[in-house]
Image 1 (tube, protein in one colour):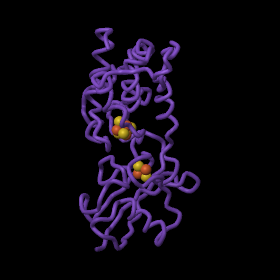
Image 2 (cartoon, protein in one colour):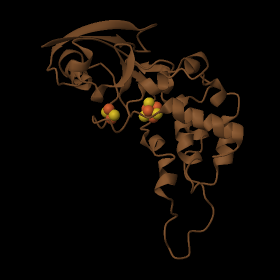
Image 3 (tube, rainbow, N blue to C red):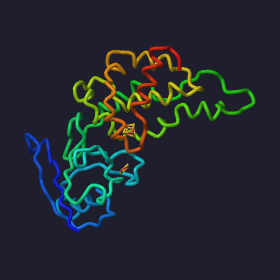
Image 4 (tube, rainbow, N blue to C red):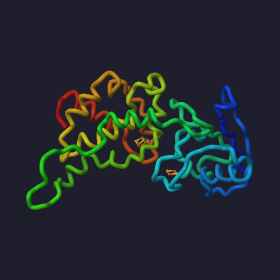
Length: 234
Ligand code: SF4
Ligand code: FES
């Protein structure tokens, strides 16, 4: 079948602003949008720029707007989105070229969350790991699934309105450590998230949850962090 694909093209050296170009390629309904982009790049226009790495929904590098919705190109089948596609870069981050956005502001916010395990106590003398119960693990299981694709943050109107907002993905990754019974820096992270650009900027719009390709309950996680800030309890 023929697939028509309209892509936002932008090259900072050549263009003052972006423009759309349309290509038609032959594809199968079980092909992914990433396959179609590869066909365009391989057979129609080698200058097309987009990110991809694993091609299996693991690395998070190929999030883009597909027919107006943030999705991973490698996890989106043609049969689910139709044969007329509009592909655009994520909103809210500067475009570097075509479908590639500058992820630095996104990762800067992630780093502010201290996204690593903090516990200065010595390990148990018997040499065992720090243990936790299945219930303690379940507390943050959902947020361990994040692949840092930025689909949630760049779907968030609060982030579009104010890019100082740390954004849903940063809060998801703070949640993963705040509710880990083995970690000792929850207070520090909650203090950071209680700042003006933290959870107060979330207006519970649910775009983030809708956009997440991993099915993470992003809005729920943000709500749990808000509650921990208010009650001082994790
Ligand atoms: Fe991507 Fe979901 Fe992580 Fe947001 S929470 S960065 S949408 S995997
Ligand atoms: Fe890795 Fe799509 S290419 S998630």
